[in-house]
Image (cartoon, rainbow, N blue to C red; front, top):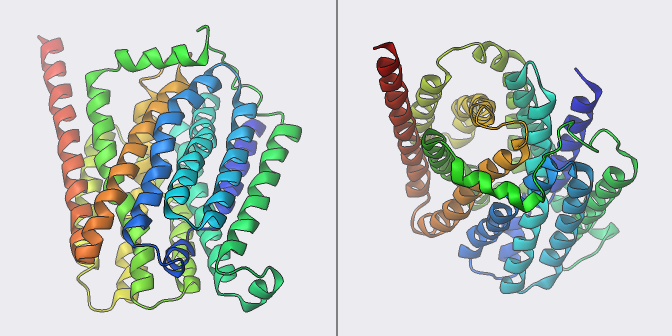
Length: 401
């Protein structure tokens, strides 16, 4: 594996560790500030809104060889925004800072993926799977550390704050140091080897006008599936808290899902990547995901089922992500990998915006309805993919005449 691929993967992993320090304490932090629970969904959705607007623009900068500067700057913007979120203590200012955080984190979220795609002349699906697994493992480790810090009386004595602000202080310092590391010492991200001929990064956005209709349908499917998976991952946090489990327990669970994702990426995805009918396979995966979700949140022994059956869904999710990224990357030319990846991230972010806003309202009514709606969204996403399959079959029939 090339050095620049390894460098990008390591940085992406570290970013996901630091990025998730605050997540396990956020539900408790919001409640400690006596902020209405519906804001939990609003905070996440607002960050995703910033990410949605910024991702194609950062992708355009990446296509012009500005990867290192964009990633470093984005990380620092995110670090500052998280500090503002922790210390503003006003729900409306916190919403503002979450929006800024989304703009910042859009840079590394978009450009690390586009770099792996452009660097991977061979084994693209495998490398994307490893990147996805490192993301999940990094997030899991971040949850673990954040959960332990949130419960630690020693840490509270070391950095005394009124609530969980001390966890966000550690996150700010960590992300700021990572930003400086990228800007001052990392050379492998200077260019992906391909620099767009377009006059400015913003002109790359014109690519949106020429997207193939099958790709648009696929992106809409991605949005629906993202809505479902986001509501699952975010409201499981709240559900653990509602059932009386500690932030450490939540961190332990997320850590296990990270390990499962890594095992899947290493041993299962390379085998799956050889399938010729990957789109049809994605449809099957989404239907299975829906069935699992319908079952898990109706089971009597929640902890047992969440550590066993639910992890089958984690395996499916770990397989789906590199397959969909690879499908989308096939619609990019050499001048627009960053932009296409940014457009993909924008459709993911649309799901991340609508999902938590819808989820916050539904969860406050009844948690089971929220989890059932995620399963339904998986089925709807699969249905759109069936439309693409039918279109492809008709195209083959016409060409054979």
